[in-house]
Image (cartoon, rainbow, N blue to C red; front, side):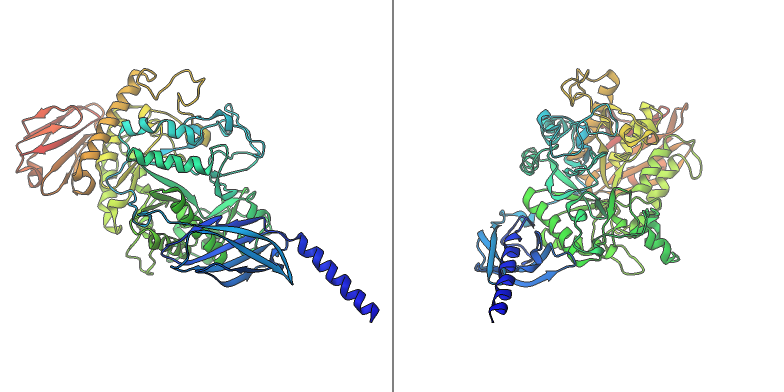
Length: 617
């Protein structure tokens, strides 16, 4: 008996010591809200051997429904429900190991902000300004180098961190507002604690925290608030296909199927067309979905329900916490499409008037259209994402003004992309753009021809869809993607205290830069007030003789847009061909120059030029 008692005592003593070693290190989401449309919440609890503990909650209106254990004993996933009766406040999550308690975790339920669910997202009335935060402006030099962050600032390295931050963006909101933009999309600002090439933000190491070299979570909330004070909206960039191999979840995987794994590094084939291709092999489609983007980016497997819940809740947490107005989904086709559909459905359940744009980097209209909400897909798939990036139009814009016009080239490229709008469920929601952070700078693509640049910008801001302009386009910034992404993401001049020029000011810009700035500003400010451009119908006429003409119209207003793509010939365009659109109008106002046009029987356009006319009765 004595021996048996001693063994039991020793076992109990050992178990007691084991219990003392268990502690909660992290809970995500870090807090939540009462009054959400979905009362269910799944808490990720992390700590050494935490799966040996049994959680308990004793708080009115909050009940544990299920406790999920995974392969890794350092995780627990606790399903709770938050009933209508639950009040804002703190409650303890208790953890028992046998008869012993380990230190509890204090979890907060916040009161949901009034009107949060009804927030209105970006739409066709908006014009978006895309910012690469590290390269825009350094507003706080004290956060350039953080001891806990692997990579330090090195402005001499095109692929290094340069020090741009949230404060830099906040400092120049008035500049963006003055230009005429209504919405800001910033490339990802969440933590990217990687040894190198961390500035771009697409290799996340912590889904719930802003990278300290950009600022803090509170700084981000302040940015959103300052935008809203100026009637600016803000779009957050989110990534669900991959994250950094240095992400804390990847370094201690909850389960083997949290990511796609191979015996050796296997990249995606980057053939998003395999998702829609009725003849695609299983091999090619699987390689597309499961292959990694790069050696430092682990490919997430959203078929894991716990991971899926984690990503959905992280999204809703950021929307509710920060007050953002929209989301841009990185690499939409690379995540499992079923997950994307469920993710977006969950977002719109909480925020019915919100908006989302998905990046579908595809060359063909029919494939691009597949990924837009309510597409007429033969397999019945619905992504639930209202807006899609119009890459087919991007390719057309970048070629049209460089080419000699023919049946299919030059201006015909714009025409033919638009003729295929029947493939989209909502072509008016397409995001249209001339360049972005992954592509040649537009001015470079046009061989630095200012007349071509004006033609492209005019088309961008008057065609159907939601226009997006990459930072620096207004000052004719240049850069070739083939030389490296650092060269298409150059620092905005004047964003750093020691810069030789400050393009945020009129005095700091060259004469040509000021011409470009004013041209874009005139169009943007006019577009803001032009309801017919936001929601009007679109009608175009087949390009001929190096010219292309289209109209934006409704029952009250009509806008004529014309292009002459000839490099050396002035064109006189007779307007009798456009009688169905122009017959009731007597004169026009040139919206760029303000000039009255009293003769409408013909339009005279110099070589490589465009005109935008507001028709008047």
